[in-house]
Amino acid sequence: MITGNQLNNFMEIKKLKSCKPTFHDNTESDLIIVPSGILDNKLRDFEIYHSAKSSLPSDITLAVTFIVAIFAANFINPPFLDGSTIRGFFGAGLFFVLIKIGFSLYQIFWANGHARAEIISGLKSPSKKK
Image (tube, rainbow, N blue to C red; front, side):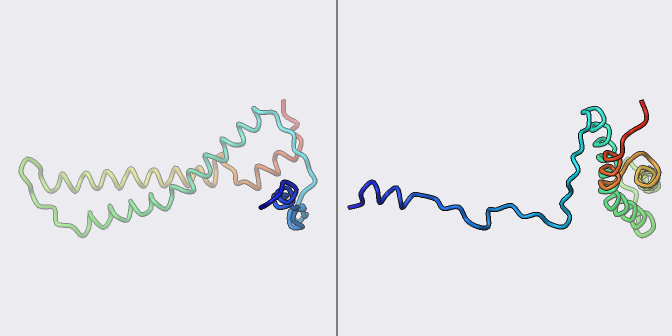
Protein backbone atom coordinates (compact mmCIF):
# COMPACT_ATOMS: atom_id res chain seq x y z
CA MET A 1 0.00 0.00 0.00
CA ILE A 2 1.23 3.52 -0.93
CA THR A 3 1.26 6.12 1.81
CA GLY A 4 0.44 9.78 1.31
CA ASN A 5 4.07 10.86 1.56
CA GLN A 6 5.14 8.34 -1.10
CA LEU A 7 2.30 9.51 -3.35
CA ASN A 8 3.40 13.14 -3.02
CA ASN A 9 6.99 12.21 -3.90
CA PHE A 10 5.72 10.16 -6.83
CA MET A 11 3.52 12.94 -8.21
CA GLU A 12 6.09 15.71 -7.82
CA ILE A 13 7.11 17.03 -11.23
CA LYS A 14 10.76 17.87 -11.56
CA LYS A 15 11.79 20.78 -13.76
CA LEU A 16 13.78 19.61 -16.74
CA LYS A 17 17.02 21.29 -17.70
CA SER A 18 15.81 21.71 -21.28
CA CYS A 19 13.00 24.06 -20.16
CA LYS A 20 15.44 26.90 -19.55
CA PRO A 21 15.21 29.55 -22.25
CA THR A 22 18.17 29.86 -24.56
CA PHE A 23 18.92 32.83 -26.75
CA HIS A 24 19.90 32.27 -30.35
CA ASP A 25 21.95 34.41 -32.70
CA ASN A 26 18.89 35.86 -34.43
CA THR A 27 17.22 37.04 -31.21
CA GLU A 28 16.63 40.78 -31.32
CA SER A 29 16.50 43.04 -28.33
CA ASP A 30 14.36 45.72 -30.04
CA LEU A 31 10.89 46.40 -28.74
CA ILE A 32 8.47 47.73 -31.35
CA ILE A 33 5.58 49.80 -29.99
CA VAL A 34 3.07 50.52 -32.74
CA PRO A 35 -0.39 52.09 -32.57
CA SER A 36 -3.14 49.71 -33.64
CA GLY A 37 -4.11 51.79 -36.70
CA ILE A 38 -0.61 51.66 -38.15
CA LEU A 39 -0.32 47.95 -37.43
CA ASP A 40 -3.68 47.34 -39.12
CA ASN A 41 -2.54 49.20 -42.24
CA LYS A 42 0.74 47.31 -42.38
CA LEU A 43 -0.98 43.95 -41.93
CA ARG A 44 -3.48 44.84 -44.66
CA ASP A 45 -0.59 45.54 -47.02
CA PHE A 46 0.97 42.20 -46.10
CA GLU A 47 -2.35 40.38 -46.68
CA ILE A 48 -2.67 41.96 -50.13
CA TYR A 49 0.90 40.97 -51.01
CA HIS A 50 0.48 37.44 -49.67
CA SER A 51 -2.88 36.77 -51.34
CA ALA A 52 -1.60 38.01 -54.71
CA LYS A 53 1.56 35.94 -54.42
CA SER A 54 -0.25 32.78 -53.33
CA SER A 55 -2.95 32.95 -56.02
CA LEU A 56 -0.50 33.45 -58.89
CA PRO A 57 0.38 29.75 -59.51
CA SER A 58 -3.28 28.69 -59.66
CA ASP A 59 -4.08 31.57 -62.05
CA ILE A 60 -1.22 30.56 -64.35
CA THR A 61 -2.42 26.94 -64.27
CA LEU A 62 -5.93 28.05 -65.18
CA ALA A 63 -4.60 30.14 -68.08
CA VAL A 64 -2.62 27.17 -69.43
CA THR A 65 -5.77 25.02 -69.14
CA PHE A 66 -7.75 27.55 -71.17
CA ILE A 67 -5.00 27.74 -73.81
CA VAL A 68 -4.90 23.95 -74.16
CA ALA A 69 -8.69 23.78 -74.39
CA ILE A 70 -8.84 26.50 -77.05
CA PHE A 71 -6.13 25.09 -79.31
CA ALA A 72 -6.44 21.34 -78.78
CA ALA A 73 -10.15 20.60 -78.36
CA ASN A 74 -12.73 19.96 -81.04
CA PHE A 75 -15.81 21.90 -80.08
CA ILE A 76 -18.75 20.02 -81.54
CA ASN A 77 -22.14 21.60 -81.95
CA PRO A 78 -24.41 20.31 -79.20
CA PRO A 79 -28.09 21.21 -79.41
CA PHE A 80 -28.92 24.84 -78.61
CA LEU A 81 -25.22 25.86 -78.51
CA ASP A 82 -22.66 26.45 -81.22
CA GLY A 83 -19.09 25.10 -80.94
CA SER A 84 -17.64 28.52 -81.72
CA THR A 85 -19.66 29.95 -78.82
CA ILE A 86 -18.03 27.47 -76.45
CA ARG A 87 -14.61 28.38 -77.84
CA GLY A 88 -15.52 32.04 -77.29
CA PHE A 89 -16.35 31.38 -73.64
CA PHE A 90 -12.96 29.72 -73.19
CA GLY A 91 -11.31 32.69 -74.93
CA ALA A 92 -13.11 35.15 -72.64
CA GLY A 93 -12.08 33.11 -69.61
CA LEU A 94 -8.47 33.19 -70.79
CA PHE A 95 -8.71 36.96 -71.26
CA PHE A 96 -10.02 37.52 -67.72
CA VAL A 97 -7.44 35.17 -66.19
CA LEU A 98 -4.62 37.02 -68.00
CA ILE A 99 -5.97 40.31 -66.62
CA LYS A 100 -6.02 38.80 -63.11
CA ILE A 101 -2.42 37.56 -63.53
CA GLY A 102 -1.36 41.04 -64.59
CA PHE A 103 -3.14 42.61 -61.62
CA SER A 104 -1.53 40.11 -59.23
CA LEU A 105 1.91 40.91 -60.65
CA TYR A 106 1.16 44.61 -60.20
CA GLN A 107 0.21 44.03 -56.56
CA ILE A 108 3.34 41.99 -55.90
CA PHE A 109 5.92 44.26 -57.52
CA TRP A 110 4.54 47.79 -57.75
CA ALA A 111 1.63 48.28 -55.35
CA ASN A 112 1.77 48.91 -51.61
CA GLY A 113 2.00 45.22 -50.73
CA HIS A 114 5.13 44.43 -48.77
CA ALA A 115 7.00 41.39 -47.65
CA ARG A 116 7.40 40.57 -43.95
CA ALA A 117 10.98 41.88 -43.70
CA GLU A 118 9.98 45.23 -45.23
CA ILE A 119 7.10 45.64 -42.79
CA ILE A 120 9.30 44.93 -39.76
CA SER A 121 12.00 47.34 -40.91
CA GLY A 122 9.33 49.97 -41.57
CA LEU A 123 7.94 49.57 -38.06
CA LYS A 124 11.41 49.87 -36.52
CA SER A 125 12.17 53.18 -38.20
CA PRO A 126 10.28 56.11 -36.71
CA SER A 127 7.72 57.67 -39.01
CA LYS A 128 8.08 61.40 -39.70
CA LYS A 129 4.66 61.71 -41.39
CA LYS A 130 1.68 63.01 -39.44
